[in-house]
Length: 523
Image (cartoon, rainbow, N blue to C red):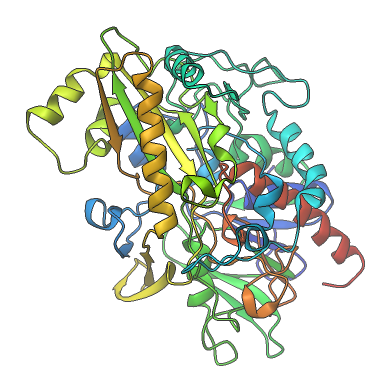
């Protein structure tokens, strides 16, 4: 029988969202004997009902609630209602991700110190560093069974990787391999090894790719200390006269509203929804939004510098066969300002199916030049470019009072402008990505504009001083002692690496802290 807690039980921790941050925090706390209610806005999907079809899967798991966009980024024109590619469901974006699990480099924790004054950027050193995070990265790698760490072997390379690797070596790149992936390279307990069937973005049919939804949440539920309420959209966080949070107002699948009382609230709705709920929780005590005395809630939105390069060849590559993203070149991830920008970027193998390729290769394009590229799909290889973008206070999530959601609340507006450093890095990455393929005989190369965001970061950033951010080094709100942020929105800067491993490591560390402080009676 599943656990059910009374809505008036104010001894529980309420976690909003069950992605790689919220799902891990909820499960870890439950395993430590803490009672947890997790509110998940979406439904529950597992390997048994994932759909290996791009469009059908997109409709099944994607967050499709109304949003608006502004700014100079191309996404605002091409996909104005879809600024981010996120999952609405148990497991959150750990259902949709490709599995790349990389540690931040040491210098990326202290970018303000290392990079110096970058005009227009709101760089800030993290209040933690590589030494602090090292043991939690190890715990996260073991939890996710990350390949090429802890003695675990790497995944095999598919044809897409073999083309990628050959080109990289011809250019003189040294650090190229099938990546550190949260995808089983052998059978573990009830979870099989990767079967190389692709569709990693559509949810792994084999359960070989780690997900908070079917890996972590069930462990927490088995303790009897975790209740997951699906189709439960958090609307507002309530507080008492002292400013202490007391519960969460949410709507169920029928639109009926409830309040779940809470001892502690952890916000983990992603970098768009988390600041949104804080802003929507404004009150006479917090007129600018809950935990927003600094004015930083929603600001410093980051999405990584991204882009793609595809190439066609004389012979078939069939890039869709095998793991979607099991290949990486890390040589360009270093900090080397002589290239014309600070920070660095990764080059990672990527394949899209024909529906997504038609949508994303060159949005809005048509004619023979475009269709001839799709005609060569079988002969195509592809890579994704992902690097550190600059935080900017003006890149932010705000409330759009002109557009209301199904509950009558203002929807989020996502504003983003590329920083000149982002543009310089992307242009360098396009050049090098094309060179990789040209080195092994590409007939055409296609630099592809950034997709709707998958790496949504910042907006509730971590800071040593309350005036500079929203939460402290534990993800605890500077303004509200029993309020925590548990997702990627707490990230101070984005680094060059895919963020999920860091989000999980921070969640493990945070759960440890919350349980300790609860046992001491401090919160």
